[in-house]
Structure formats: C-alpha cells, structure tokens
Length: 204
Image (cartoon, rainbow, N blue to C red; front, side, top):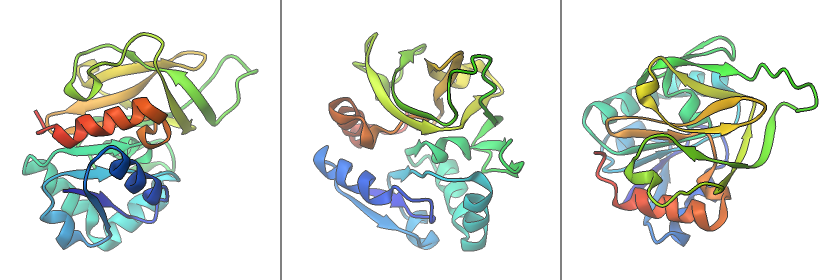
C-alpha cells in the first residue's frame, strides 16, 4: 500500500488516480503518525517551497518524512517533493528536508524566448541506471510544470536530465529516496509505467 502525503501542496487526487490506473493500492494522509507507519510513500506537490515547508514543520510531517527515510522506507518525490528533498531552496530562500545534499535553484535562462515557468512535454535523458528509470529510452517525454529544479551537491545523485535552454536535473536519488522534477501522474502511458515500477521498488 502506497501512502500519498498531503501537505496542502495540491496535485494529490491526480496522483491517487494515476496510482490506481497503474494497479497500485494507495491512500492519502495528512497525519504524521500515519506517515510514520507507511511502508511506501509518494511525496508529490506543486507550489512554493516556503509555504510547503512551513506546513510540514507545523504539522510535524517533516520529521515523519525524515524518520521514514532513515528507516529505509521507499519514498518517491514528485516536482515540489523533489525540490524540497534537498537541503535548501533559492525560493524564499528556504531550509528544506535535507534528504540529499544540495540546493534547489531557479532557471537562469540565456535564451529570452524561453518562458518561465517551464510548462509542457520534454525529453528525459537517463544518465545512470535506476530501477525506476528502466525502459525509458531516448526521445521519451514526460510532463513538466516548474520554475525551479533540484541541483544536488554531487553528480552521483543525478540520474536524469532534461533540456530547457540548458541541461537541468530532472531525476535525483539517494538510497531509498528517488524524486523527479517531471510529473509521472500527468505523463500518460510512460508515467503510469513509472508508477508501476515504483509499486514494486524496494528502495534499493
């Protein structure tokens, strides 16, 4: 059973629907005690890092997520759930969860024809093998909506990139935590296949 974390950051119901379409049993909770007992977690979200972290800290969900990570629970971060998995974000600036060393940064595009936020379908280029990225090939596209992206301190934590005027990190991982800047739940068949792989992932 997958526990989907609700922390007032939107996009929760679409993640639940996508999990069910992918054949994964899932439910939504905003209770830290329930999250602490989870055997598998999806940490999604859209919105701003400062308000998200404020809610997580006030609710105690930040500690529950850190404890779940330390306990080896497989965790999937999506979009904002990827950005605030790092130590800090330029948005605010904001102190974040610190599951992976690094900082979330804003696009600084030289091509003024490109708009921020980056919205729409884009190629995902896999740099390192990972069970959740199995089967993704050159030219495969996923859906993005964001102005910031994760920038880990070590390239060892970068598993995939995409190009929006410049290469940016779109998939990060460390131990039992994996996170994507793209939205699997909005990415059609490829996104459902991604969630199906997460259903069977043991965090290794």
